[in-house]
Length: 269
Image: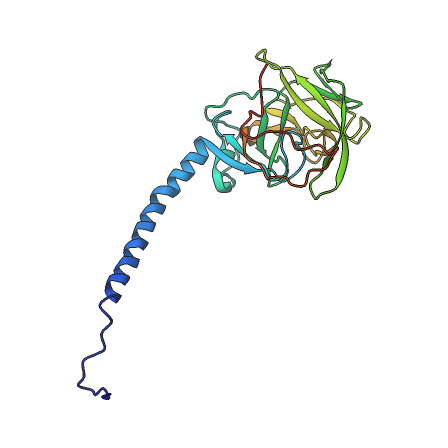
């Protein structure tokens, strides 16, 4: 083996090195082009069409379980700064203007920005501006009319975390301004919990009143820590569950989660 001298030519890479470097550079350029196209497309789609949200709590049981992912239509109620993805709207000045705004309907499952905290919520819309809302012994009243509630069905379910809990399931029917009522299931631990007596309360102009279907496990518009929701805080309407965590090890006598994959969350009629 000879020792290189000062007159020896510099060492050269193998013939394969140059093509590999070129391929890596080409792939990096293609990825950059993809991001330049995909990122604006993603932002546009999640602003004007649909977005996905996951369920972090049990406030909407039995319609929604922890871990569910829901598709939310942004165009259902028009657009405000809260419609922008990635919390970009927080950088914009506050405004009560909605572009192409539409009035939501009682019974809709809505996604919105919490009025007092920096977090996204999902609840059922119960009251519109000017509605008088009250709860008496767990029974909902809208504008002085006691809403229909079926006879209760006592059940045992697995709560988030694995503990068993007993609840009573009812079918509640809400009036709708367009003549098509919404009937949906609610859960109550009893009719004498903290928020089972509320109001009467008149929903202020430009606001809506939201409640969770899991009535005794939901901090919602009945609670002073949230209160009514300004219309401009609406993000969209939850349409359906497109992913649900699988549940294993079902027990005899224990209620399984309700079927909900690709079923409408706000059925009419």
